Image (cartoon, rainbow, N blue to C red; front, side, top):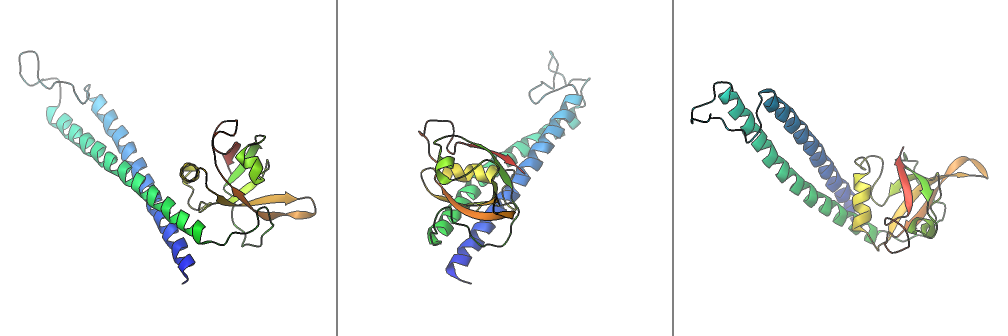
Length: 214
């Protein structure tokens, strides 16, 4: 395995770790909602007193069950805080690994047709604003993005990974591979572009294009 292949493997592993943590976060949040609903079914919340005005345990509340539910919610909330921190660290590591891959890769001519193995597009360019970074890069409406830096159909996490990469790479080059219909050929061609996200170009966002999942 070459050094570049090792870097690619490491970047993919880092992103898989981030994906697993994002799934864990979703699971924790779902259980917290379930436990909150269960607690509400007992007519109490996390801070509802368990004693009456005279200091005696409330007879209208199943106190042992409520205490158990509250304990579980507290545990889940703590686990969620740890998970969110782990996600931040994992995404940071994934982006660092992706930068290493980009820096190790040989630059190729922007906008040149390329021969690569067919891959599944994961996002479509819905519109491109004039004078935007996306227009400068050569993106066009209806382009289908196959790769956006290290992000592809298998690891984009509902486009969260793409958004994180754009923020992390502001002012830096990101290699894109897009599938584009060719007037000279019935089949779509794969085109390589270089996009540099930036602010201050006169419009909203860092790209100046509208992306929708496919």
